[in-house]
Image (cartoon, rainbow over all chains, first blue to last red; front, top):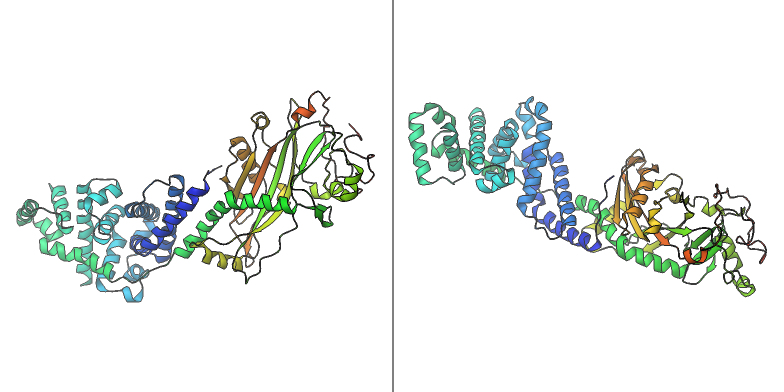
Length: 173
Length: 374
């Protein structure tokens, strides 16, 4: 039986801070997760869980400073867990229609479709590396902190992911 | 070697490569056809990686999950109001009202601000507030009405004789005889009101302790906090058809703290939430506001998890829901009064509620303390 002891002050503070986090990061984080998992609805669920995890963290430790990096880290880990669970299903369909399903019709530019097709074929760690750096804007060192690895490993993954992306672009050219 | 070249290619893609690394990469792909074929030159790397940024810039999807998150956080936010504000207000307000209810009759009057204490033979009972049932919230009113169910559990040593001063004097009887009649709970008495049929009584094995609980309900209206939650609350009020409730009523939850609770002098209010799945089974118990004594909180959660619930119904469909409740434990001050008194506890103190004959209707005759010691 899980028991959580909270004080009223903590709850109030945590609630206000999560509110700020949600306002500032909800769209960017949702797009990021949508790219990672390739499903808009699932991305919404994961992002909700991320913010709720932030709330729980702030409730238990109100002095803790939650950076956007923490949000991305939690979202990445959740997405990777999902991708690894769905690994078999993920590698079976390779048609483009599957890749673009999560994108809005006005978002289906050539670059957007290429990226999504590449994401669909990438292993989870490479997908996370290229998304955290080129997409979310973190440096390789920051991404390494988020992913719990070294900066060189992140660069390597970016390179391999880029190789897949290049192959996809060549196929669709 | 290839790992290093991959790392350098990645650094070039991220714009982090030094001049020396770029030079090293150029020299490598000049002699390594597979690498050149796989990654291309520096310009090619920058062209490929720019796809990611342009794909990101083309995105317009902007989901607003604030309402959804707020709906989930709202349940937590209620803890705030429950934990301090509401509970305190609930107790104060209901003590002020203190509408005593005759068995099945309804509110018949007001009493003083302090709880009615009746020493009834072998059981000391503290009778707290019992406000009328809450009225449903009008849809047009934006303020949510919180229904605070306030359970009072009395930990007392038994038996306790009825003090002479507490015997109903004729003047007092003339004022509010039915109040005392209706609220008297005595395990030996045949006139136990139906209202208290679920009063939990427990007994310490070595000595004679027992708890007596009474369930009361108070409705409090509070202003919604100015946060993300107020919009979601209005949505939820309109969509919920029926909320979670324990099978057997609120008094079905019967916390039985271990005997050490009395020795520790444990008392306080435990506010808790039970997560109930769509099948009515409790999945998780959360102490929103602890009483300060783990033994009491554990007892509450244990009791809450042992009860089945009717699931939350939304548009005729069962869903996961949350049941919120609170228990207040009082430490009885009857210890001193009961010292030196022979203690005899009946093995079956919870007699069924038979007739509705008020046992204090005849002054000084049918008093439970002087009546039928078993």
